[in-house]
Image (cartoon, rainbow, N blue to C red; front, top):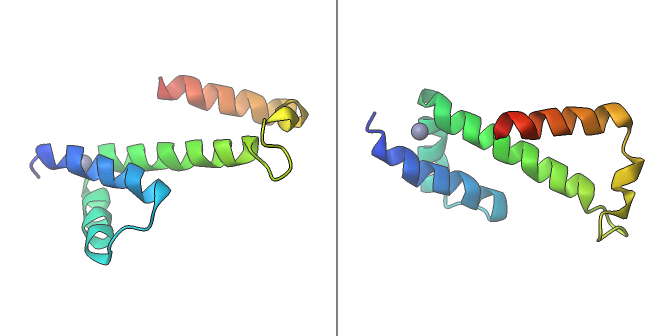
Length: 86
Ligand SMILES: [Zn+2]
């Protein structure tokens, strides 16, 4: 597995968060993620981040004013996870 391809695939991972990938790109990415722990981890981090940002930008709350309403333990978990991501 040439490590150089990780750069390409990590870009595909982040693109896949914003738009639908072409079928060939999707399947190539899936194959790579099965073999590459680093890129699989990157994908799970991005997914988590997009979940968090979705949480922070709820409909009717474009400025994230409701963030303070998150349960304390949920905020602590998010903070811990963000910290572990560096
Ligand atoms: Zn990789």
